[in-house]
Structures are given as C-alpha cells and as structure tokens.
Image (cartoon, rainbow over all chains, first blue to last red; front, side):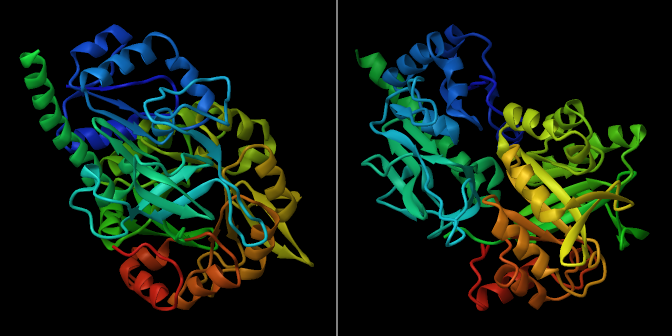
Length: 214
Length: 252
C-alpha cells in the first residue's frame, strides 16, 4: 500500500486517477504516524514551495524515517523540489534534505521568447541509467509546468533544458523525484509511474530481508 | 527544447461535442471522452473542454463530462465556459480538470484570477480573450462574443498576467470557424506583450496555418476544434508536417 501525501498543495485527482489506472493500491494517510504501515510514499504537489511548510514537523520527520528504513519515496514536481535542502521560492521553509543542493528560479529571456513558467512538453536527456526510466525510448517528451528547478547533481538521471539545464529526474537509492507531471505525460509518464510501482515491490522486499537480518 | 503544443478544443453542450461557425450554427461532433481518447492516440498535447451553454443543469452534466474525459486520457485538461466564481472552478478541478479558463468573469471580476492563482497556482489559471480587429487594435468581447468589453486585447492580456494568469488563450472572432488561418498579427501582438505562454485559437484550416502561427504569430501553442473533429486533418499528420518544417514538436 502506497501513502499519497495530501498536504493541500494542488489537486491530487489526476495522480489518484493515474495510480488507479495502473492498479496501484494507495491511500491518503490523515496523520503522519500512519505512514509507518505503508510500503512506499508519494509526495505530489503543485504551486509555491511555501506550501511544503505544511510538511515541516511530524510529516517531515516520519517521511525522513521511512526513507532511512529503505521505504521508496517518489516526489512529483513540488514534491521533487522538497527532496532538496530548500528553495529560493520560500527560503524560510526547509526541504527534506535527502538530496544536496537548493532549488532556484529559472531565468527566462524575453528577447528570445524564453518564457517562465516553463509550461509544456520538453525532452528528457538521460544521464546514466535511471531505474525509474526503464523502458523509455531516447529523449521522451514529458509535461512540465514550473518556475523553479533543482540543480544537476550526482542524483540526476535525466536533465532538461529550458534556457538552462536542470534536473528533471533524480534518483538515489530508494529516493526518486520527477520535476514534470508523469500523470499528465501520456504513455511516457505512465511508464515512469509503473516503474516506480515495480521498484516499490522489489525495494520493499529487499528492505524486509535487510530488516530480518538485523 | 520546449515544444510547441497542439491543443484540441471540444465545445460541449448537453454532454456532446458541438462546433459552430463564428460562434453560431452548431453541429454535433460526438462523445467527448471517445474523441479525447482518439486525440490522445494521435498525439495531441492537451485537451480543452468548453461548456458553451453553462446553465445550472449543464454544470452537473459538465462535471460528468470532465470526469469521463479525465479517466480516459493522461494529458493536461482545461475546462472553460461559465466559470464565474471560485466554486465553479473548484468543481471543475475536483472533477479532474488541471486548469480552468476564465473569460467573462475575469473581466467583470479580475480578482478571481488572483484568488484562483493563489489557491491552485498560476499554472491552473488561463485567461481566455475573444477579440476582433478594430482600427489598429484588437477589441475584446465577452458573453460568448456578444458584448463589447471596451478593452484592448494586448492591454488586457498584460493585466491578466499581472493578476496571476498562467497562460492566455487568445481567440480571433474574425477567424473563428472560418478555416482561413489564425490571426498571426494579433497573436504576435499579445505574445510580444506578455511573458506567459499564448495559445492561439480561431481560424485553423490547413497545416500551413499552424506553421504560420508558430513562426509569424509567435504562439506557444495552437488550438483547433473543427479540423480535428471531422477527420479532415489528423493530429499525427499535422505533427509530422510541423516536424518536417523544423518546428519543435512532441512526436509520439
């Protein structure tokens, strides 16, 4: 069972719909302590980074503890930005900090017609082999809508360029993040969610084995 | 590279897709969910559902239509037509819309743009502008094109952006349904004036019209209805054409 975290940042209807279409078992925990009984966590979100202030405190602590135990975590859009240390959009709000780096505003360019927010379909440029990107052809297009973005670090497995190059997909161990909206990215997006569901099954099996050995 | 978007618009009345010529003479074009699914297979980038009656009864029917469409396609879905207050937008978004398109209500109550942008983010708020050429400018009309708003499209687009709109959907009333091409001059005038994406609408008739509006018109996206509905031009054929002419396009 996957925990879909609802912290009031945007509408979860489309994420729910995609998970349902892929046959995923999920629920929205009302309280942080319920997270412990879930096999994976998805943090969605659209809008201002300040909205993640709803996660500061018990939610953040519980999700951080789940990650330490090896529970797979997927951050979508704002949820991916939250995986980093923080964002210039709301400097006073700390991110989860499981990935190093800060989220910064994309620089547009009125002269060349480079508009911010970055809205629309753009290509993923693979860096290394992301498990979350299994089964996708080269340079798949996915749907973005955001003004802030995370830096390209070791955790980046796919980058996208809109004036500057930023991290579109990150993964490290059991932590995954996508800057775009897989639930709005047609077949390519559904494949990414399907990969996360598959990874959840294999990662939670190995986490259980590791726990049994302790 | 960010691609140019091709958007299919479905004007819906009583749960059925209809399309008029210059805002009148409606013809039926089918079931919205089935049509949306066909577009998805053909590679459409986005879908807009416009409720063209927007009566109280039709609002409930609209929620069912949105939900039916949203369950069949995993693409950005915009809903417009008769969204007058925050609750109307909330109902559309709860039913599965990702964005709402405001037209008359944005002009009569511009604070609604800001209210919705704060609640759902600017990316969820499109301001739709219906305009006609007048002199050297572009006159804005409201109430489905029946009432002169006494505003200029360029100036109103700028204000909408400053109030929190995430995109502008600009329809040429002179060209709507005529298939004589988009109004590139008007589209470029608005696109050059704002820093948010501009969706051009009204007048799509052949493949070259899309090329023109993406180049001369400086549009970020182009919306069409009738040419896709009646099998005259398939979305995949259009995308192949644009790709061959070096327009950045998402190919499936």
